[in-house]
Image (cartoon, rainbow, N blue to C red; front, top):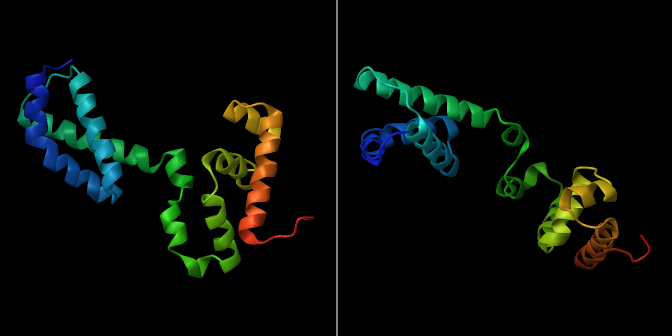
Length: 160
């Protein structure tokens, strides 16, 4: 583990380089900041001896690149699409789907989770109860109430 002075010196010396490198790979400020923190945390916790300043710089470059690649190929990242991106692309989404998505997003969080897991991910109520740590009957209630709220928002029929 490195001293606070060593870590502060490294942050002052390499912060701009690491941020620029991450921004080039990730094209996203929030992800860049996450990887920036990861890189310097690894540095603070490592005890790798460096032969010279060039060796240390190369270490920072390699760790930053590897961390960016790991984030880009992560399971979540490869399958997630920001909601802002979905809502900004009306041409790719039929108007009725957009209206449903906006209605689902306007639900209270406890309903949103159950609706998403059931209708978008295909989980059953017992599976959702295990995921959310709720009673199965509670999940059924959440799903029924969310359907009712969505019918009210979207103007659906009561007997559907």
